[in-house]
Length: 278
Length: 301
Image (tube, rainbow over the protein chains, first blue to last red):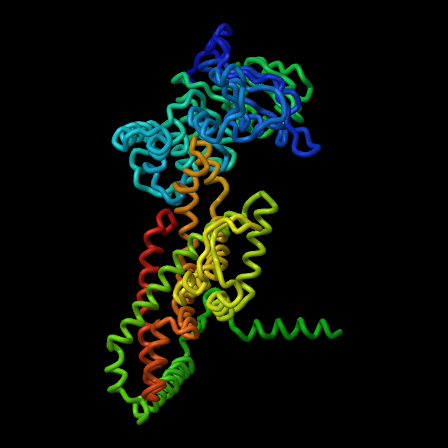
């Protein structure tokens, strides 16, 4: 695999595009996010790994305001998530403001949710036309380009139910990209796919990373995190227990909990993954 | 001892079947037997006989008066009734659809008060027979002589004579429309619940407002599962309009009753009405089919 050493990919001086400060959230008595602090730099591939139920997905959904949090702050592209400044005071968003913000953040989730009543092409132009007010013609041009980039040039008129899981997920990536987002969020984008379809989706994500897209990737694909990730945050029980360059996390984990988690994940596919790093 | 005997018996059976392996032995195809053909022929013959007899009894009945069926089928007075029936059906369907959508959304509201109001509405309007509801609205003038808008507990406002405001047709429209809203509300709610939550989330994540997500994603997908029960409901509605004949609104049924009251050809005129109801139902079913195809996009085929 051809890639720049992750640590050098994005210089530390690049200002953070996303700043997460002391975010907490609980469902009833269950504390799912326990004081999260995290930065994502412009152009960085920021992976979040950790055991199921550690709060990764919840954190990701806080970034595009699909989930609200109890305290702390998230700033994304100089927007304080959840608030707009009016007369020097930060006022809670209206529904319209929340929608406008979400249109700038792409989300690809585990359960592929292409609009089932629309064709692939219609899915991709839906956002630009309906949300951004683009002309249908321009949206189709962009969509055509995006669909060939994700390898679906011949699937414009297919309905989602006629596609494989991997094709659906690639179409979902194209749909998110059609909004020209500042950031792409991936929430276990390959978890629901058959093993042989995972590679094609990861390939598209990797290409996107090489194009310089800022990406926050919650994943169980350790090889992807290792190869494409710049910095990795390890979450456990609502906290970030370790955070650092991919090379360090995978070769010299400092926390015993991280080492244990990685050991579990590499148990069945160790050899290849490790050799790449050597 | 007995177990030993059973085993011996089994071994003997296998031996008798010869040396042909089980997978190579011929099998009898299901439903291919001689007896099956005889039996299905018999069923057809009996059914045909019964049908032929039923037709001949009706057709040769001297009280049948085929000539008057033909005459009244397209008589202006019947056609006027037909138009009234269609009008009541259409307008109460509109009231029912709009009201039903409101009731469905209220029923799914997170606000317990709004939800309770919707549940109460459903309970009330589905419990009281439609005939009773029609009579209540029709006779409302005997209970509230005046209706209008105003400030409660004062005389300020606009009021009018109930019997003028609620003409028989309007009373029927309100009665049937509000009753429809209750049934439609449950149909619409079922359709809305059938939309995968992820579809809504995808629309929201794309930056759609809730209203836009409803129009662009939820409504078209819900329509797919709403249409079959809706078609059912429309046909029910069409036939339920015949109940307005109790207050003499001049629909198809009222007209047919009016004619047979004077010429005593009861069955022929009921058949005239039946033929029109049948024709309208066929048209409704056809439209339902068209709509189903229109909203079937994306279903695996």
